[in-house]
Image (cartoon, rainbow over all chains, first blue to last red; front, side, top):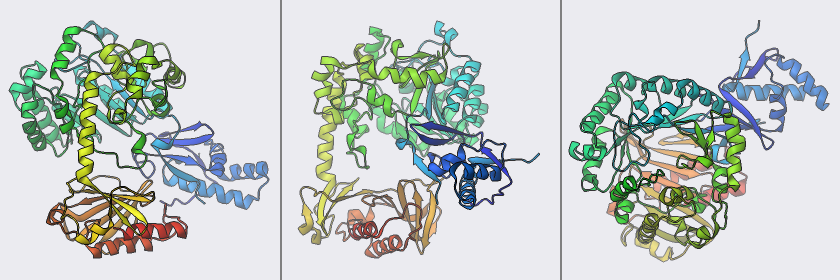
Amino acid sequence: MKTKIDLNSVYMPSEDIVAREIEGELIIVPLVAGIGDMEDELYTLNATGKAIWERLDGRKSLKTLADELAAEFQAPPGDIVKDVLGLVEELAGRRILVEVPSK
Amino acid sequence: MKYVAGKRTEKIPRLPLEGNLDLTYRCNNNCLHCWLRIAPNAPEKKAELTIDEIMRVVNEARALGCRRWIISGGEPMFRPDFAEIFDFVIGKSVSYTLNTNGALITPKIARLLTKKGVKLVALYGATAEVHDRITRNPGSFEATMRGMSYLKEAGAGFAVQIIPMKDSFHEYPAMVRLAESLSPSWRIGAAWLNLSACRDAGKNREIEAQRLDPPDAVEIDRPLPQFEEGDEDRTAAGCGPKTGEDRLFASCIGRRREFHVDPYGRMSFCCYIKDPALRFDLRKGSFADAWEKFIPSLADKVGGGEEYAKNCGACELREDCRWCPVFGYLEHGRYPAKVEYLCRIAKEARTFKDDWVKSHRRFYQIAGMTVQVESDLPIGGSTFHPKYREFEVRTPGEDRILIKHHFSLPDLEGKELGREVFRKGRIIVHKRPDVWIYLLLSTRPSPGDAYQAVIAFNNGFDRIRIFHRNDEAFRKGNLRTLSFLATDQVEKILSAAERMPEETPGFDLHSDKRRKVSDVLKCL
């Protein structure tokens, strides 16, 4: 499922999932039916995805988050933005991330 | 780039994904075989968790990842607050299983049970006479039938769970027929019975008297050889210590994704643990304490010692045995103790399996590979076309593909088949993380006759289950393909696999692997 992502929007983990880091791996557990593709499937993120996930606090916009990551990893901002949008698109499409309504 | 990967639950680190919750051990019935039941007014009633305590446990478990509950008893509906508890628990879950004797189901509860989940309703006999004799509760058969009719009226699907035992075994076929008439889905509960850890000699004599003779237990719960990839290391019980391991529960604790909470809030890793020393009091600590600290600490707590090393630990029937240390405890009060009744069942199971393999499995050496063909029906001398005789071998080589034939279609209604990745003509292909599902549509699909066959391939395309619509072609014999399918159907499957785009999820195989898949499929 494709979800159009706006870089100025704010995202946070859904209340219907639990994310746990175990032995260095981030595991996302859907807690209600209808999240993700399969009822019995859990999810894990790659290293890039994990670095972005850790900063999805429900307060800062994706743009701010991408700027922080670009500064921290000294990476081209364009690449970081692409990664942030890619991850959020995948997770929002599965309802693992939800958009925080703007005030 | 893909940032997110699906992960099957068996491949994740230790997480408490599934909770077993026994709401009470009190029960309206008083079954001859029951190892758990206490009387309706037993003093333990006062010690049962309150609904508020249950909510706390469920919420704490959920925070660590618990997504599914199995609710059981005693009779869980014996609690007057069952509906409220159930509604809360399933509201916090992806799915659930409920075990009940069905007698206390009301129209209101039946409506609650329309929520998607597994409902297992126990059946102890095909007639009121036998059922009520086992439950020692006159009118219980009628009450169970009434409960099932409420479920049907409400549209709440359920499965009948047949509980066979000595006093009902004479009408076992009638129980199966009754179960089939009550629901499209039925299963056998335990074909063998545990003793009660209460060590009441009278009670345990009663249970022992209800144990089926081993040949009967094996006949109704057939121990078919393992087929799926990765199953080879499992014992019949599916748990228990690894070979050579003295720590009896270390392996079990390490790989379990479930836990059990008894009616009094005492938690452990398995529902059969009755030893208070292996249970954590959730009234005195948090769920996280129990899961993260207490249960892992039990891995080193129970050793097998000499008794285990000399008996079950060295037994060549281990692979076919239901024994687990918890059953040693229930039988004798000692974890390493062997259970003679299970030894007898294991011997029967081994004989059954050996006989089954002789009549249901064949090996063919084709194109440098061994094709192992297994069938739910016996393979005879005229099953395959004579051309296969020259390819038949007695033992498999290293490079092996397995094909298993079933003669009824799986019920796909409401099943998650995964993403549709291919559709052309009468072939549709779905992809789940570990399996490719090929649907071969009927020539004139109609409700109830949608498919000619359903085929499930593992990711390596070397474990193949084929579900045929019926056994017509098989019984005719003289089959010209090992898949029992018409040659043009095999061609279509091969063509579908070869045309699968490289970017198909899960099919990002390099060309060598693709060639291998093609070779395997040609053997069909």
